[in-house]
Image (cartoon, rainbow, N blue to C red):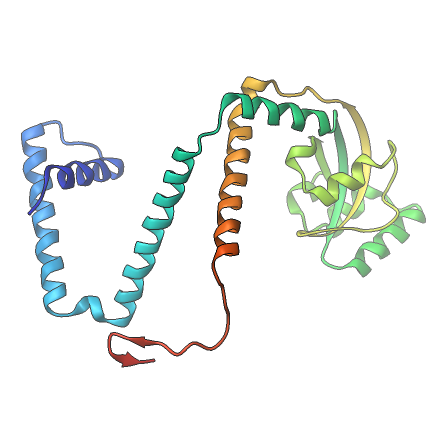
Length: 243
């Protein structure tokens, strides 16, 4: 049986991938034919126990987990809506602790701390920062511009880099290499200026997503606290066959 809901869901998914057919009667026939073909293939697969083949079984298992996990999150967020007042309060908190300046800096990115220290030593002896960036930096894009990163604010740069830059004085070069997930940075602060802070209307979408993600994280943590997650060797019997 193909229900009206089956048809509507399939049609919606189909139209998300390809343009709708202008002739609605023709579209309905095409879609129902596709659905009938799919059902026949599924029935044949089950009859021939294709769904019990190991790789197929685990693909189905993963898809089921994905569908249920997403549905659970949708239900949780629907049952626990985020109010505009909560978003406003969080926006005010974020603005209060946000750095009110933006910075312009150059950097030389290398793979090891030792190489970064060698570059700092060369700079202390008078080597040109821009030339070393062009020659040494593995950040090719900024390296071509002498390490120039243009103007940036706190929310668009990795925390370790921003922490170092915000503590530096104009024209200063970092005394020690700065480590991030990208590698080791040698930084030169070119300048700083007051930052134009976003308004509530500009930021509320991102703030709402931030609060939403924190709620999801809290939900998962509570489930972990209630449940029991173990790791180790597990004896598994799948579909009657030991693995």
